[in-house]
Length: 185
Length: 70
Image (cartoon, rainbow over all chains, first blue to last red; front, top):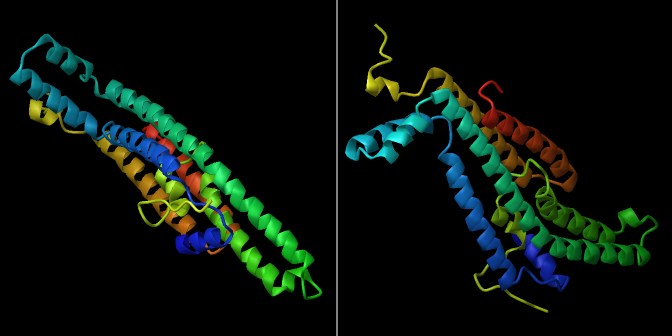
């Protein structure tokens, strides 16, 4: 599907994401991945590991800080609740980053939609058969609209409160194949 | 005698904690499967429907992440 979209954009004269946009997306991705790693560190099963590590750290270095750390993690139920709160705030952070990536990608998605809508209208006007829907060129354009609709839906989904796609996953269909982006303006 | 004062035993996750983690893992697995389906959708219309399904699975993950009881 990615290759089909790339070919389609190229034939419509629409540029892929540029170097600056890709760099911004990569920055968002790095921040998103960092939050994801922090989320993995506050999963329920990590509580016992952290309690054990704090205990070992105190025995290795009996500082007041290490003693306080043991005390902070002492109540398992409270620590589990704290970790759940941390997962909540980390998930909100990841959604915010995905939403920022969506904002970056939206102009390109709009450009694709507008170009295809205009093409569709033109083809409907030039239809060779009685019914526009049965005209092969209109059907072909309909296929393109459907194809790009599937790619842009990820971007639209980025503003959903349930979005779990990372910035680079959202951009997947609009990233050039080669590391050096092709700018055909 | 209970083993609650055994330091080695004290650092073992409780059964409730294991169940909570298992609920999160199961919910996340369902999301991963739903995401896979979305990416393989045959049409935009099918994808729209699959997205709804994905969102409901993602809500289940959020619920699992927040509460030990779901």
